[in-house]
Image (tube, rainbow, N blue to C red; front, top):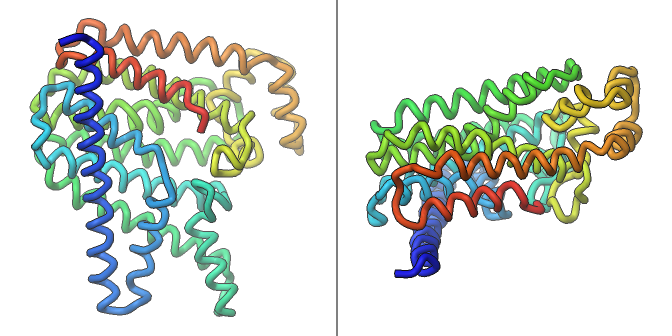
Length: 348
């Protein structure tokens, strides 16, 4: 069998499993909606908010890496437990994004109004009592919490092999979010802190832990070390791409407000590196009341975008090197390298 044929087979299997992940998630949400609607029509509203949010799009990166880790580790494609694990990861991601939009006061996600914006609009349209914004944020927090409950429910099918990895993943995400919010408030350049946040919120959460969970379900704990090495560097590349897209992208393409990180004073990894390496950027950041427009202009003039592009390339190469001699199924080494390129050079 040629290398190209092996790769095609690898991808076809994963596509079929990802289709099942999607089908499983939405069939579950449909059942949950009906169950709560029978109690009270409004009781089903939170489930509907989660379903609408997930149907609006998303790249399904975490389930994809989970399924990939499972298949690379020799897992049986007919094993439904990995499907449950992949669904759990997507529910966890929905929870994180719904909450993140509240933290960032973002009006758009995936080209549609965010959950808290939708609820605030309902409040205004109904001429209800209280503050529409506070109402919308409260409802979004509850929707995010319910998505987290669903994540735990599905991951229970993959236990106990992944208990520790799942707990670590959730804790790392929460701590990463905490540090991210704190860093935005302090707005002081600290490359090490920014790298830690990127590691917790991207390296571990997006790539390393999903890959590991898939491998553990397949019975391959020995893949923990190479998958961690791969996940951390590719995760940093993923985060730096995210920073570049936020800085130079446009709202229509991204499906969420562009330049939002700068407007919300997010101490991104890119910005923190720029502060460290360019005195003009550092001076602008340290000046109280500096506008987002001036900061963006200074960042462009600093040439950091080109430097970050070079670093992304180095990180992708390091990801390939991390799994160069790893004992995984045929075709998967090349496929994981291709996946590293996909997340590092995406345009949304």
